[in-house]
Length: 115
Length: 116
Image (cartoon, chains in turn purple, blue):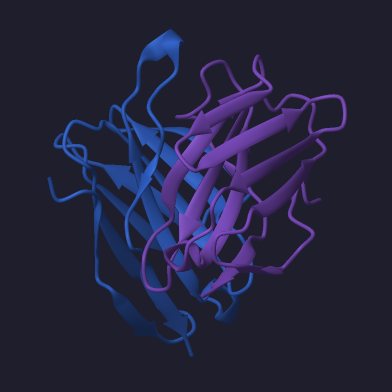
């Protein structure tokens, strides 16, 4: 049972344009959501997170949007840069202040930013 | 700050053998979680250690066991290896804040285990 789904295995975007990565979840107990970026031969790197009490969180070029009624979140990268090319994982947890709690990951989306 | 470190980087074992993977958490972190990432999949939670005890466990058989030492480092042991245990094993560390939750989990580079 895949509780966190990333339905797009890959995405290709031109440098300077917006990248939008999507994630859906099924467990209504999830209250904390994170995005991680992963380069080959490295571990996932934390990018940005959002609590279920918010619907938007920004950090520089990265913005995460949460639509709880639709059980959907998205990561926007503006403007996209070639160095953003990596696998992006959506993750969720269910507990109060759940960053330390076990994370449930999606299968990842490979983003390729073309120069 | 060295971040989260894991050893070894790569490991090749045969079916039925046992393996031990090691993790040193980021400085200041006291909680260690282990994840298994199979090819083409996202990481799957194995278990989490805090104060030298297993605090949470995912859907993995008892062949998977762990330990946390007083210096917060941790080991993952897998007995009776199966071909399906071939994966990237990731260690993540974080700082527990009790009822306030905790910090984001920082991941190490992983150990690539191949079972032949």
